[in-house]
Image 1: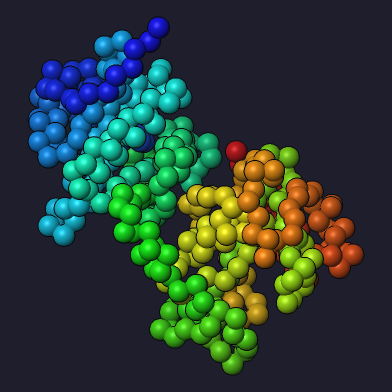
Image 2 (image 1 turned 90 degrees about the vertical axis):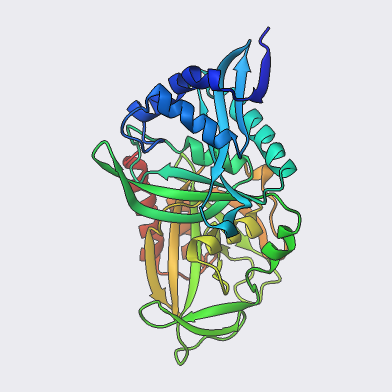
Length: 356
């Protein structure tokens, strides 16, 4: 029977932890170090970090197989209650829930010490597949309740390849909840000029934005499953426009203070009840009806019975093939996008599938 324990790191752990860390440096883009640190350097890191932050080791039958720690997020004093997290699990021990145990314990320790915000700086790739990196870390942090906080493209190079950085964030204090709810004014939208620069002006979300007004931002999320079927939603029968017509997976206006990606993730959560991580730029942007329309193409198999539909917005959802969507379109049961746009959405989805 395995005996799993979590304890504070000690200096004597340095060699075992360095053995866990070394493959991440040599074989992956998870760590952006080029060279494995020396044992002395690694020992010094443990000393410095553990003097201020929790540094935890997970042991199986007394043998270290993983570790996690918090460290300085930024040197300025104003950031003192924010931390950056790191976690490493021995390669042959991944997928057994050890990372979850470490993070839960680490979060408890940080709460006790009065820290407010946890950040994870995660390497991301636009290549699929990528020899040196998968999306496992992003998915892990999503499951642990982290949300996207920032995305930086092509900012790090390793193995001769350029990598992106995704910052994910989890707040520890109850007081943040009300602040998060009020951080965006969901009844107001930002207006943009023809170059998609903010004008500094806003209008009510339900305003009739005509050609005499600047542009707004609208998002459309198109979720495909592994059979290349598109998740489509039927608009509620109480909608003022196009009731009971079918639409893409989720759509809506980006509200004041949001980015396009933030708006896309919010719309998916509000309409379908799922937290979906979107890290790539929109696959397509089309300007019509005085709006920048961003189309996000996502591949994800979903169990539709687990979705929590927003009844005021969504009457039903289902998977549909290209032929089935076009049949709805020809019967005037799908929103009146250009037929070529619907075809293009499927073309892009299939192209992304071929690139896998």
